[in-house]
Image 1 (cartoon, rainbow, N blue to C red):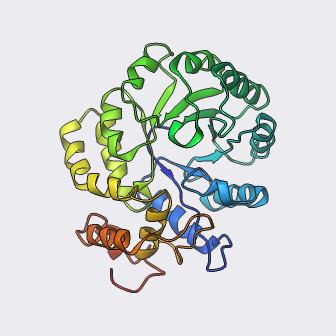
Image 2: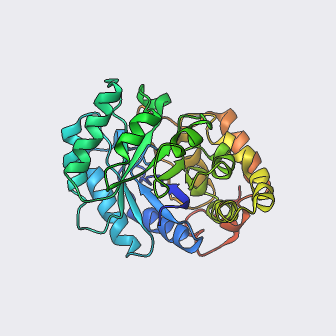
Length: 308
């Protein structure tokens, strides 16, 4: 269920900055039809840091309702307060959420023991499967392999999204934990290498606009057909990098709007629109046809009529 191509879903908004349910329905159907394996709702790419708690909860509930059990939904439930993370997690019990993605507490820089106690406490207060999320570049703390090993002993802590950027972490984690524990990449540009080294998939930003390609890449890699997977990756590698020339989700949201998947590319402050230079770079890459299937498919291209 939680292997392969998992999209870190963008949060579509209207011109006033309110959640756009029409666009949300469009992108969810797009992922279902392009064989994305699961959706992460309200993670970093979903702008969790600028949504109110009410919006956060309602957006995940809407995602579950629209998906109608056609694709697993993973709810972003991380917080820098353990109590808040528990309260948020419990909101999604028994409503159709398949698992939670819980980021390490940010800003307050807990110790390894603090991280262990944080996730232990969440695990003890919910029956929902928990996927840990380690992204030191954003949070200011690093969940180390030995701490992951300790946490893997809890039945409902089923895996980790490892976004430290250190590929050597895969073997370090795999040598400590049981075989069923999932190790998922948080970086598109190294995802293929990550899977080849023993990872189970990727929580992908690029998949927002190239779902079919990312799903095929991950499927081939998990079947150990690395030569074929590398051909797809070669076509996508520049796009992977371009989408991080400015802070995520600035480039990916602009690109999704440009090809017609969402009505607007509204962001909330302090996030702003990409620079003219970045826009030109993104357009140049889109024109190469790497995501042509989206642009030409009228089933999904229901909003944007202008050519790229």
